[in-house]
Length: 219
Figure 1 (cartoon, rainbow, N blue to C red):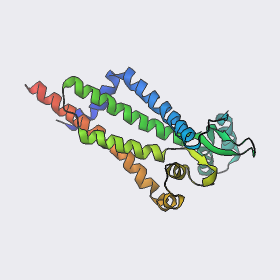
Figure 2 (tube, helix red, strand yellow; figure 1 turned 90 degrees about the vertical axis):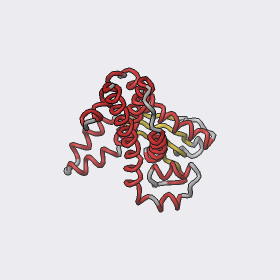
Figure 3 (spheres, rainbow, N blue to C red; figure 1 turned 180 degrees about the vertical axis):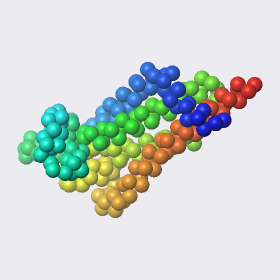
Figure 4 (cartoon, rainbow, N blue to C red; figure 1 turned 120 degrees about the horizontal axis):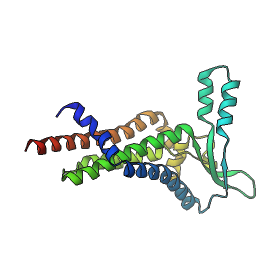
């Protein structure tokens, strides 16, 4: 088995099952945000009572034109919201909790959805070929999905004012804010670990399919 052969397996499988892959990718992206809304609604027993679609393209253009430094402009643009929904207090007029989608967050969620869809079609291909599934890979995807779900959550809560959104996700799950802040310095290693688990699972299953196919052709 050559490196080229197993590297091609995920792309060939996704292309062969492009409709399933595309469906899983879109569902994974959309359902992630739906799940966040459901979690927030159940946690606070409140339905969202406002939604805002922002004119982000105009905002990007204004920021780019008015910011001398391109690096600073990109940083500012990264924080510009695309969409926002949540619950606004009728009494005080402030948002008690929100779900906000910004471009970097959306891209991150889409990458994870793409990896998840790729692993799913690889597993389907494995069943078609009667190739044994890698249970360790399935466990890695489950753990990676949990990590990425928390790290990708774009939430705010008035109790966690000015805290990064993944702190809010941890706090809503019952973790103390002080503990969430204590592990805040490890955000990058944590998210790299989550993404690495997805990639490792895909590589392991692709290698297994390639080896199984090669063995079958040899006979």
